[in-house]
Length: 506
Image (cartoon, rainbow, N blue to C red; front, side, top):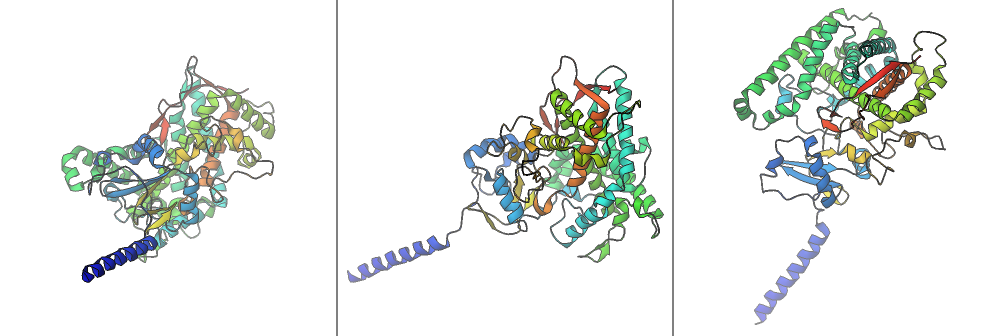
């Protein structure tokens, strides 16, 4: 009997010690989320890109909160829809959240080493490529050196809109915006003003690859099998990649032949800055395919997002004529009268900092209609605790940009277009788009992976919007209201592209 008593007491003491030990060593749970089949995960979502899960994620958020985790196949995907949690992750714990998940199989076709700023692993090579872009081509002094290129593109854009408006029918503006932005980025990338036919060919190939990313996405799951089942799609991807190479490599080679140590620094192009880069982890220079991919990234990053944002801005100015009139009054107060000339003088880049209402309109459009509803996914480099949950190492983390910009706890009447909310406060403090102090919206991302072209994009948007309003009156097509319904392409675009009647101001 005594033996049994001893055994029972020993077991009780052991259980008590174990409970106390677990109490002090218990790990925080992973973020909540819907249940998934063991090992398989939620296979129903496997073939769908994250951007197409947005409506599902919003319904899940009401149940699980602003931090949740989904199992999609073998992957763990974390979604953050809270401004404060995004700030804690990207600013306060930026080093842990700054990596990128492994690139998909289709990205490795023309660039096996994946030397791109947007997708490179967080480390010395990424720092070198980003620093080269920021200091070599996006430095304020360098950006200013391309003022003549912006004037050339603006003149071309105004003339093309004017020509189409003379027909008396409404103008579909997005085509004009995309071509203008592409011309500008091609000039900055290769240092040349190419012929229209050549530019349109390059643009066609680039857009084919961008808009095909969803169709080609299926090839990333079991690639060996995908090549057999989706042979036509595979051949199409190979064809587009080959056409891209045939278009861009000759431009790179032609530019490199003209480079010399004595060439005028004012004519520096993005390609020029890539020539002498020495990769720190491999002690070698970039090869031609890597340079081509960096140039392609430069063109894609600055064209589609900017032209999409420009269309959203102009759509709201057409929809709300009172805002358009107020902006025009601000522009006129800075630029003065046209002095009897046939066309009013264009807004100069030096004028932009004097136009707070213009800046407010651009920021409000980026809040209400961010071109990307998700920033590029991040990856955590180690287990990390956030808001009482542990995000497992190597998890992919997605930030729900649109939801942050529409959060009623942060923004009053978030679905309304109100530029006045961005006018400087009585203290004169301007809105911090970088999110370094706090994140209220993040159309360019935030933290260490924030878009390096942020300042250039804002300047381009302000410059072109100001001059489009300075030169034309924009009114809706008779009998039609401006439809702001969204559609997902490479960016989030207008389902029904903007058509407007434009007339020159006199």
